[in-house]
Length: 415
Image 1: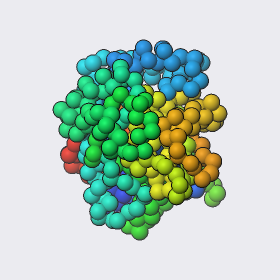
Image 2 (image 1 turned 45 degrees about the vertical axis):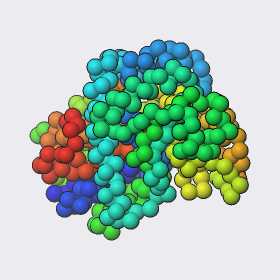
Image 3 (image 1 turned 30 degrees about the vertical axis):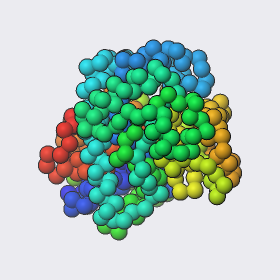
Image 4 (image 1 turned 135 degrees about the vertical axis):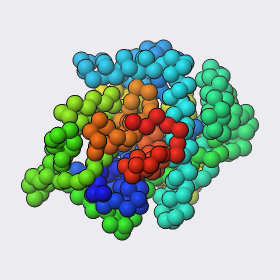
């Protein structure tokens, strides 16, 4: 079939790869001048099955209230009249029960495990490079209550097939020796040896190159104005570019526009509870004298991740619910660097950090929307939240199966 993929982030590009590999004629439409320039540009860099515990869990409401009013809070809701956020928040609260949390975690782990295996197979097949490291992910805890809660979560993840093991402070330092100067701050950790890290932007751009070599047609600088439908099916995508307006037609269409997907689909009567969660990152240049971690870390109390990307250290995290605002907040940027200084006092970067923020497409359950919409030739691959990089290959491989009329391998609630 002729398939049009809307969006050239990591989810859109992986969708194009697996669809082209399945024999479809693929065109990718993207408003930016190249792939991976928005949400996939400077994320946390983790392939983290171990992050499968949803934001919507029984502890979340009280934590959100405790953080209210703190400009540097890990989770920050900007209080304003926003019907979409109000609706999303009510749905979020409904997902915070123990039963819903467990069901959502099972879904996320199942897809994430499959996705990690698909990424490894793609890497073996193509030799794609993206500053990746296969050294696992180490969660560290500085709050005894956070650590106690993690023991239960780790046991549940092991039940679902993710080998996330609770470990002592001594074991944390043995796995990542740069934590030795701050061992007195730690109370314990957990470690998932099969998780990975890498630069999602490099991966997305390099995979786009491999897609082009396979025959995928890329239309960059093409803003999508609207989707056109008739007779209960999608009949085209109206774009505007330097050449003017144009209607792009195909047999099937894949919406992979992250946080911008709901606005495009709403005129078709498709209402997705996907809301932008603004995340921040800092990228710090390293030199020969820098003492930086080589194992990817998660600081659970501060909701931050640390990933070594060649001669750079990426620090990323937090969530700010403020609509489609992409302005950098100085207080939140500096909070990242303050925590870096606390955990890695001997880091000695060789230059100033480069700050960035991006809009992660969050669903109330943290479970993405993947599969056929109520329009039979319109497919969705969106709503991955903080796990877009982790789930991208598995989501795309499963979507290609669905488009081709096959049953996907993961035990996941596809649309």
